Image 1 (cartoon, rainbow, N blue to C red):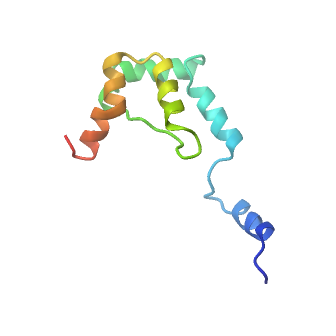
Image 2: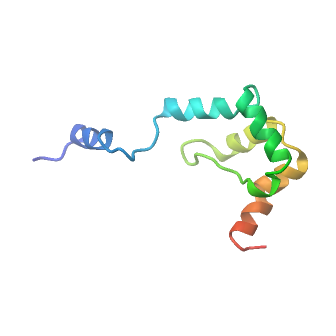
Amino acid sequence: MKWTPSLAARRVSKNPRRAPSPASRDSARRQRSAGTTGGRVYVEAANGALADQIALGSSYPFRALRQSVEDYERLGFSDDVLDKLFSTNAAKLLKLA
């Protein structure tokens, strides 16, 4: 069987472990935003009990890292939590601090 882009697309689409579609990623991002009930709970938990257990997540290189950082800054995290989210918690996880 000759390998073609359409054949590759069919194989990827049948892969149950494939990455979520852009639509589902956007939906998940919107659900985490501060404008939704789930988003507010997420931010409240991070500003409280989960402050030491949260780290930056992004979809780089598909989305600019700057855009993800700006989104996190807009969500309503406290300055202390933003510092932990952007660096301190990741450094602890990776045993760099």
